[in-house]
Image (cartoon, rainbow, N blue to C red):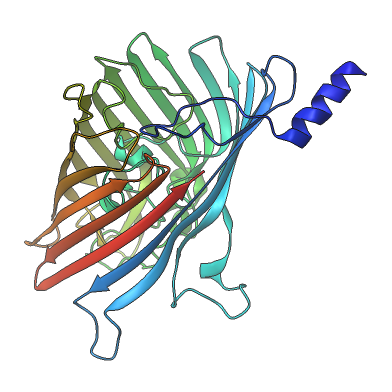
Amino acid sequence: MRKNVILLLGLCLYSFQFMLAQGSPDYTGGLKVKLDDDGKKYFRIISWAQAQATYNDNVPAESSKLNFNLRRARVLMYAQINDKFLILTHFGLNSLNSSTLSPVGKGDGSQLFFHDVWAQYSLGKDHAIGGGLHYFNGISRLNNQSTLNMMTLDNNRQSWATIGLTDQFARHIGVFAKGKFGSLQYRVAINDAIVNGLDTRNPTTGGPATYAGTRLIGSKDAGKAYAGYFEYNFLDQESNFLPFKVGTYLGEKKIFNIGAGFFVHPSGSVIMDSNGDYKGEDVSLMAIDAFYDTPLGDDGSAITAYATYQNNNYGKDYLYSAYGTGSMIYGHVGYVIAGDKTKTRFQPYISYASNSYDAVSDSRNIFGLGANAYLSGHNSKLTLEYDNQKFGSSKTGTLTLQAMIYL
């Protein structure tokens, strides 16, 4: 009887437990509801929204240059029955604007969908296995990026290197293992590849590859993809409780990590030979990266820096949207200006990406210049960023103001 009363009180009063979020001086970590006396059984709910106003100077004459966008609206919940079992559910929507709104909220753009649903089982203190719709990705830190605490306005688009091609919004259905050996963290996964991906083209004789192996060849030969990411933590140890990588700690930790990762999809792409037959082309993506975040003194100043090199093989002369066979370099650096941590803090930053493609002689170059105003760490912040992108004869400049709330 006593335990039932305690459980009921816990559910009704929504008891809070202190869980400091990165860079937030006055935030207690959202809602954590304890389901037993010692808190080993619990569930936690997190919610966040990102709203944007965007000015783009490269639009048709009849279109407005100023537009509004609900970039993300998400709810995430995870729960533990005990230290062995965990289940996570994450749903929401992305990029809701005048083009994706529907009159009664039933259109594709306005629909909520699951981003993650997985369960995991702990194998001792430092290792776990699990399965479901998950985010334990390979390739690089940015392919595992959290959207709660990015330093730049958004993630480097090409670092989510399989989004919509072989997965559902950077998530696969499959099984994973994750853990650490001392300072070395790892995550590996075996996944099913999506059948109805974004690349709906069919290959032509002698033409470039298309990413349609599962659709055109079948799941027996092209249905599985393999991924992994490994990183060594030289200074403070980062948590790998969840798969989502922190973008900037605002100097709350001293972090220096070097990582390497891969994504391999046998026969993921398809070409057509001279006889008109489909032939599978293996997809292989490899990357190395480094992440550094540290305070610069006791005055609140801090630096965040990240750099990666990625080699992309999507098949012969593959080029679709921003993705193509070739290579990519990307980096960003930000500086938190000295100031009182309990008040608004500012962080100017720059970013640069260059993507080269075998299929064309031009590179896609993207330069970003921006600043964050942290009203309460990552939990309440404003971001202003100018993004300049050049690819061949196309040049685009975009100015975006984003407001984010994370509870």
